Image 1 (cartoon, rainbow, N blue to C red):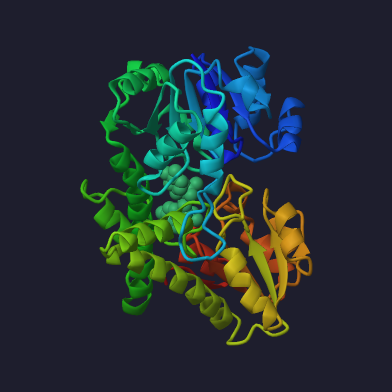
Image 2 (cartoon, rainbow, N blue to C red; image 1 turned 120 degrees about the vertical axis):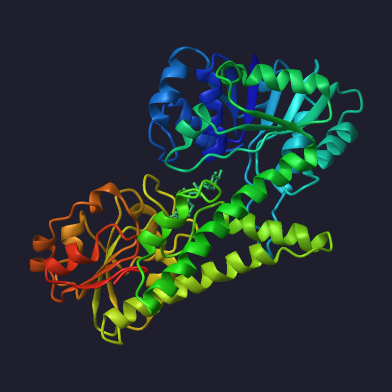
Length: 435
Ligand code: UDX
């Protein structure tokens, strides 16, 4: 099939490259000509393991092209995916900013020729697909098209795997014809007996938010349990194992941390609250998850302050990890960037390392010191804080770390190490839900 992907960000580029890998002829389009120029030169603007190789292979095979001109891409396409950003609106009130979606719909409309399915891949509020349909009809009354909602469930750092081996494919549409086209788009997965959920437009749109909100709730739950474990002397790792072996709960997403971050959970939970409010119902479980997440980050500031004996003034903090999770360079809503600034404002000196995230952090926090590895970060530090569980931090030479430090305090915000490992190396140990 001929497929057009509008938007070459994290979702659009991964989805376009993977659909090309399926054998479709894909054109990834972006209005940002600089981005397209870089892609045409083989530069990948985001860090996603394996994406550079996948893009290069499919460009080489002629299955994947890039363009900044819709007239190039839409007329021949059987499916046009809208994968543009839906950031939280600048009002900061949880609304998703749909201006890019609606602009893309308008731009597509005039170039539609034969029957085409216009697919919302971006995470959009319930009802957006119908709005897209209305906009296209108004812009081109004679257009022969249907709309579909096809939310993505890609995790940063594992996006290609998540696309190629999804737990399920969700397709919302009212049209049998569009359903047929979407089956053809995902034919290789169909042949692998991947579960498909064919449903209505609104259900598909809400499935995306509900999935992310539930995962965020699960994380906030285990973060709260870790606080309780600290008070009662229980071990949250054992607690997570003990409840996670229940098939109804599941072991995944039960790792306490400094709070969830990224471009999805924070944005999508707020958007879901907004959707509930606009429809006159509450989503108190999601409200709680959001509140707990904010409180968790604030609790981490206090934990680090306590680890420094009650005051961070004049102390040096070695920060291991700035990205919101490993295997990404994404700093959006990253907890370290909410936790470190209040400490720096009170006089802490920050020595930071992250395998992928430092370039952007240097622009945001130029007065922090950025170093080449974990050991350099610990030079003269009073405390070392493990924020992001990069593989590079999972087997540190603790004796060497201690020898470089001024102090002997280790705050493990991802429970990478056991309390015993840290204590045996001569550190005072602070973890999450462990003593
Ligand atoms: C998430 C969803 O997993 C994915 O399905 C959706 O399409 C996009 O949003 P992503 O945001 O890339 O993916 O990362 P994810 O791996 O889900 O982690 C989100 C945040 O939760 C990270 O900050 C991570 O550190 C945190 N997390 C995750 C925990 O604190 N504990 C866990 O057990 C799991």
